[in-house]
Image 1 (cartoon, rainbow, N blue to C red):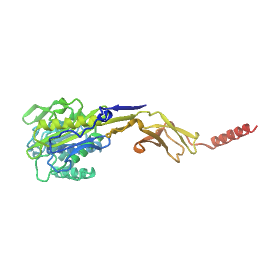
Image 2 (cartoon, rainbow, N blue to C red):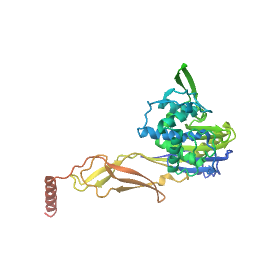
Image 3 (cartoon, rainbow, N blue to C red):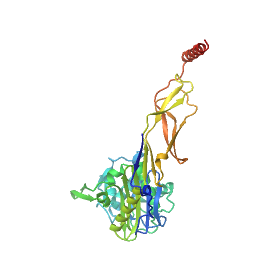
Image 4 (cartoon, rainbow, N blue to C red):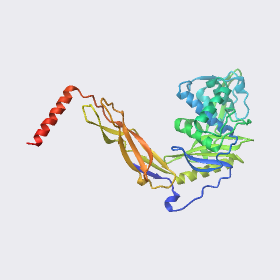
Amino acid sequence: MLQLANVFTLQAEGQQTSGPEITSPSAILMEAAGGNVIWEKDADTKRAPASVTKVMTLLLIFDALEEGKIALEDDVQTSEYAASMGGSQVFLEPGETQTVDTLIKCIAVASANDACVAMAEYISGSEEAFVEQMNQRAEGLGMVNTHFVNCNGLDTDGHETTARDIALMSRELIIHYPKIHEYSMIWMDTITHVTRKGTSEFGLTNTNKLIRQYAYATGLKTGSTSNAGFCVSATAEKDGVELIAVIMGADNSKDRFQDAVKLLDYGFGKCTFYVDDAVKNVAEVPVTGGIQEEVSAHMAGEFHYVDTTGADLSQIRRKVEVRKGLRAPVGKGDPAGEMVYYLNGKEIGRQKLVASENVGRMRYTDALERTMDRFFLENAKHQ
């Protein structure tokens, strides 16, 4: 079944738009699935990112979770250095322990600088070693105009990035670790401090007001310092389209959120979502040496495509490319080829085809039986 979800396309009515009016000095709008840039303004000028830095900190935390280096239930002890952080914090005390899960919540919701350093030290031994990893990860993502000096975004000479680079690391985080949305969408919560002074509750309130003010918001991270101004990497999803809007250097908090909403609304107006969910058997693939000469193949999952150009997606065409030289035995789920998608003659994506059933290797008796069947069939044709 082919589906088109047209998300308010101005182009369909023949109207043109020059783009949103953004007051902030740097901004970019990216479609998350394909990483396509829809709109930008001075997106490569290096600026202080403030706490939007924490997108990279969170990315490395989730990397460590995926690699099994840490677990959400692990207890993390706060060092004196981590507890000394100023700015946004949850007032961790030296020697206090919190779980990784709680510290992620503190970073994503309350933008806690002390929680960032505690996690950096837990993962890498020191903040310096962690920051080195941050810069290596940034380089691997093609963030060519980024240099991190700390893990929390406090104003420091040489700590800089760009709107484009923030979009790149934000995309990496939400695409590979969608669980981040479970944290970034928390509006209010509490944590429990257990220290030498006793037990106390501390309230967390999300710094990203868009999750309450914008219907399609899914996160992600705010930041503000005297040097950076007001920044945000705002993520949102509507009708299958996921967008990232980055604002840097706004004059005030209201402006950054207004500019982010303008970008997101503009993006949802330009994007059209296409999904092919015909995952049932779509091809018969030849098998060499099997008890069957062919195996049915189906798509490994739905194919998704987001267009940002106003193209007519009803013109998308599919072509099956079967795997050559497929030899028995074949297991259910084994690679069997690809479904290739084209729009106006240009390839726009692929989806894997997998075997729908098992095909065993042909034995001598099977081969003899097949040969005899063909012999008698040929004789019957000539009688």
